[in-house]
Image (cartoon, rainbow, N blue to C red; front, side, top):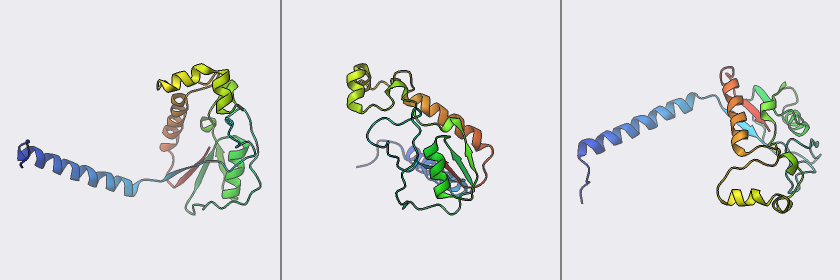
Length: 168
């Protein structure tokens, strides 16, 4: 059975998609990689909300992560666990701290488990169930965090010219 669209339309769409795909491939091949890495495990990675409110050190467990050999710049949240992760991964690299990379601000929910959160702040679960990106009490929501990350990426995008690692 034939297409319901005229051949000049389908040909145009096919050509457009091919050109678009080729352009993306070209841009991707010449893009400067930016890698995001989560900090190494801490004793407080225990199922409670761990954000800006607590600043634990990383565990002394052996690190098995692959280190990227082509990294020239390392940016990090100023939190201890992130700085220590960067030092473990790249002992001789300068680590540039930036407050825009701070962990999620859980406000007064910091340290609570999910179960404790929904008991203490039942409106959070109700709003999440409705698809609302509500702020943690006295904290931020995912849009706030996304805005910070976008500000950071916009700030560094004008200056980076080598593979870059971001730890948060």
